[in-house]
Length: 305
Ligand code: XMP
Image 1: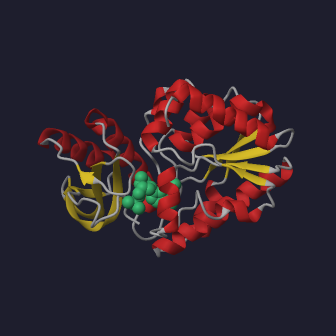
Image 2 (image 1 turned 180 degrees about the horizontal axis):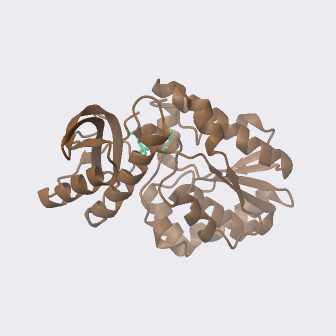
Image 3 (image 1 turned 180 degrees about the vertical axis):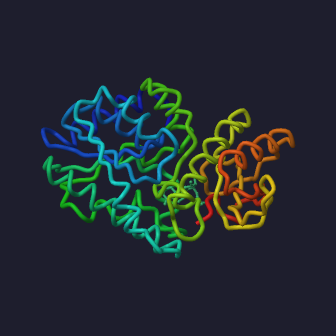
């Protein structure tokens, strides 16, 4: 991308041209990519765009409220409350790929319902360059790239940011005056907290993961990580008060990266790590210990599943 203003003008022109007087739909995830694509497309075609946010129950703390606030100016915004349907579909499932698959399928079902209701001809997506590369290599099934276009018979797919890297998307977001909480937000995977919970997804593990991710994002902001996250990785023994507990183990991870394809684990000072430990173990009676992940990518991935 040579120049942000030029990029935005060209992208809007091309969106308007492609969609004409048709109707478009976009899935908002709360992440910077889909938010930026939605803001860009909305500037171009206004209420000819229906932005759809599906609350899967796997979102970060405060995400739904944030979306409601940020995109309140779009009259066509749809918020779908689908938590119960997602958790029912995921009950008892422990295999990582199966979990991803179920989430992807359920997401498509929810999205498809709205797409049919508003009679959408076009699908706008916040796909960026590294998504396309990882999808080709099928390192993991990325549900923000595969899947959606196949279900509804869209006349066309519009991907205005398909050649941009994440840092360029952030520049566009800033230029479009998206709130800082969105433009500077760490990337968050489509399947949400599900990829940060090993084994079955339960309400309790989700509560632990949601609060722990909130603590980590807050405490590590000053390190400006590409991503800082927390995952519920298993159970271990601990002592809480006078009792031994068999509680959750939360792994904290903070990485530097340009595009998520490779990453380096960040060195965090001891005091900060201890504060994180104390806040996470204090937030939930069933958390027994907190560990810090020092593994780079490769050999590890950034997420846990
Ligand atoms: P991994 O864990 O593969 O992640 O090292 C690389 C980057 O991709 C994000 N990620 C996803 N994003 N859908 C997404 O939209 C997904 O299924 C998905 N899986 C991983 C991850 O957060 C990191 O930024």
